[in-house]
Length: 179
Image 1 (cartoon, rainbow, N blue to C red):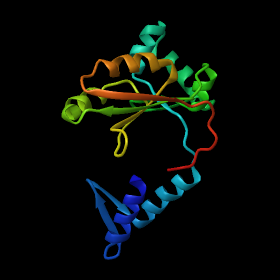
Image 2: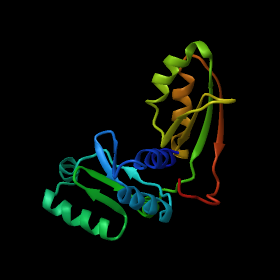
Image 3: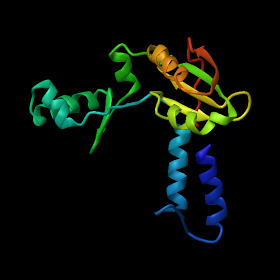
Image 4: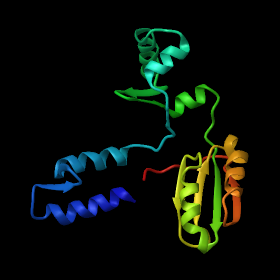
């Protein structure tokens, strides 16, 4: 978990200083505490990052940017999207409102050792919510929308060196815990 690694870094680095550096950002102990509390009080949700900018969206809808802004504000106020400078994310509530349900397909993929590098480059381009490189009985795990499962499997089968794929279909979210 990245946050646990950050916390370990904080504990080690903050012992002797009021601030520490992660990349180019300087965070104080209090800032990290705020981040930790936000994570602990939050719940994981599904958010879909939109790949269309507001100018293009307004053009496709045949409305002005100002008119689109009214609609975006309404959607944000209703909790259906998150919008900011340069991004629009559809929230879990927004996804459900449009008929989308997050019961993903989980794909487990084994790759021949001699094809790992090429497979890695191709797999990371596959449309998926998350792609993990894993150790153990598999080499990759992909979390994909069930509606995309056939296409993703087709893309995987086209990659040289794929030895095996296994598909698991989520039928219900029993519990989610913050990372």
